[in-house]
Image 1: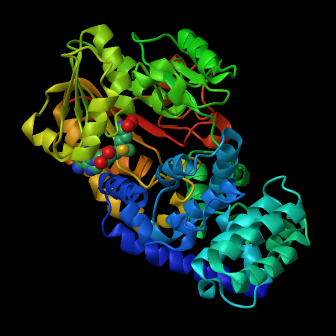
Image 2 (image 1 turned 120 degrees about the vertical axis):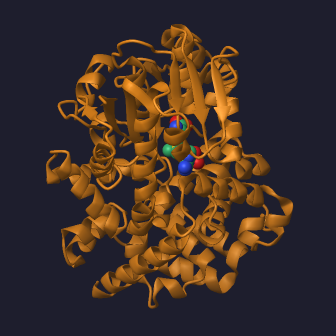
Length: 528
Ligand SMILES: C[S@@+](CC[C@H](N)C(=O)[O-])C[C@H]1O[C@@H](n2cnc3c(N)ncnc32)[C@H](O)[C@@H]1O
């Protein structure tokens, strides 16, 4: 098992290096821009023609379309840098999969990607060469097989034979023999036995958690630091990491004034055939019991949308913070793709306020326009600027500003199964200046007495409390005074059930305690 340990570390370094190269082009808008481009590429026939049999579908979907689509998706992610949430839907469409097969393909793809670190550590014990020297498609086949054996209730013989059949068409007979031998070794032990072995052979608790709960070591360390900084016990780390490996529940936001949550729940039940329930953390949320949200009329016409409860809560916290005097000019400084902008605009419409929804990336500004299409005309205006300009160009102009800063996204790993393998510590450091500059710009653009919400979908301390403290120090030197409001109290006034961290001044939500993304929110009032 020492072998697994060394190989695991080698892979860890490899990921760091790849991640570092990616970080040179950072900025989440640009990152998401590439996501969209990759999705277009993997959808396009020309893009597909460049791929192997496994990704082109030349092997056909044969008798096992779910596994074939899952392999196609995994290969697009590992080889082309595609994003699972973007590449999978067109593959499911192209394959014409029945609903059950589509669900299986989705579970295989997402589960395999999330638990890839665990499976790689196990595969490393079962092979006679470094994982880097295994053909990429074959390694994806091994991960897919490992997930069926250890992460799903597929009987061993079915998991092995279906994956070997897939290997034969996708990679040839020799590869299939290899896949067969490795999967049989994996099938020789239960998941519990493998986990015990990984724990035993890891040099320390951090490495053990990294393998067992399938996160890069640097993410394990960053999340431990974040828990401690928020006054939570170190012992929760395992539960937090495990929560990142769960399928998040699909949550809808019923945009105020456009549809009531109870009405949306009835529509959802009729369209999806599952009984939804109202959420605990956001008063306008509906938790979908299952089914495709795209079938719901209110989602199609944008009176409602899929949006995490944490995202809903932080937008409402900004909208509902007490304000003296004028309350007409709201700014969402980093608005793309527009979930929070649409929620803010729906509240603003009821209160006679107007929202500027700003986004630096033009294609994401288009998404914001789409998200706002149910909002009455005249309430919201979409702009495409660098948010850092607002402090200079419109000083003291706004009453409420949301800074939903570009960040590492470490708080939404449940939704982006491959993200943990792509990000690096360098990405976090690289975004730090931008986050502080955006917040400083917002504090300059808000009027005295106005409120700014600084939000990230990351709990990393460099992106959250430290970013706020750094920006406030800088602002103080520039003569802008700021009061840090009690965000925990603000959340408690709004949430049907107070979040676990509601006693803190800056709010940090967690997937393992609140069933939300790990959203952070600081509420700041300008005092001078
Ligand atoms: C976390 S996302 C915002 C999510 C959005 N608030 C929502 O709820 O849908 C951050 C956004 O900031 C944008 N961004 C990055 N740098 C920016 C800048 N300098 N000025 C304005 N927006 C920026 C990114 O393109 C990205 O769309």
